[in-house]
Length: 123
Length: 238
Image (cartoon, rainbow over all chains, first blue to last red; front, side):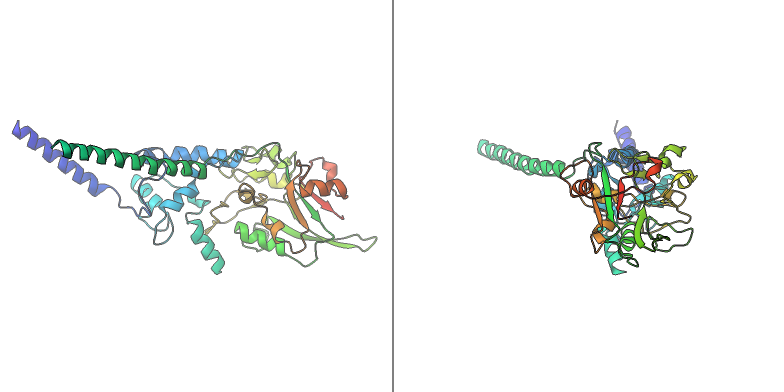
């Protein structure tokens, strides 16, 4: 019995350690839970964005809570105000790790609006 | 022991109570502040009335404001995007010269929407004609169909877009009537920037709006009214 428990324990610990080591280290900006549960968001954020974009553009129903702009407002790096600028930026870091192409930012800005305004006004 | 238990129990009760109070107003505020907007209503018809008598030749303020708002380069080569441009016209027989801004006329029956093979070119319920760039394949049929030459194609990759105005390579774009401003109660950048207040923006369906009162009282025309597209942009003095 003792052997079994210790075996299980080592297995769990090593698994947890392996998971920790392999997952990407992200610059999560402000971080923490914002609009939904963290795990739920990991799994479902793309659905929110995809359905939300059609509602916002075609019907004018702007869901501020789940908009891409709100994501960026919270999760952009506190260093460079971006979710895409560096390899460990919030969006880029995870998508790179999962090898999922990220083409939102070919059109959309990955920068916080306040930072963008500051940059524009400086010009 | 029992005293201590009571204390612990009271402590828990009060702290739970405090937490509930703290969360409840917070959640209330949150849901009010971040509620979904109702969306575009077909009761509204956004439009503009442009008084060419007030529009000064050589003045480019509306164009500059548009470029700044929407992140356009301001260049006018054939491959550069222009959402609004100034046009100078002259009546040859009388010699009268006028200047006017020309942009997407936000037609009620837009030919750009008719020809679009992917349903990307679309008209919102409140009359704003837009390109859904998620669907646009860049075929440019709409550019050929538009009698006002209002649309542009983005030829090169872009960076530093306005977070409110997504734009990207391989898609067609045009004046959005500053839809991102309208949806939060503002008005288009060109209308705001005009030093002579030559561009009046508002709801044509609202009897009490400035624009509705003005189109009722002064003579205004639609450009190429013969095409029966019923543009939302009207001109005075041409």
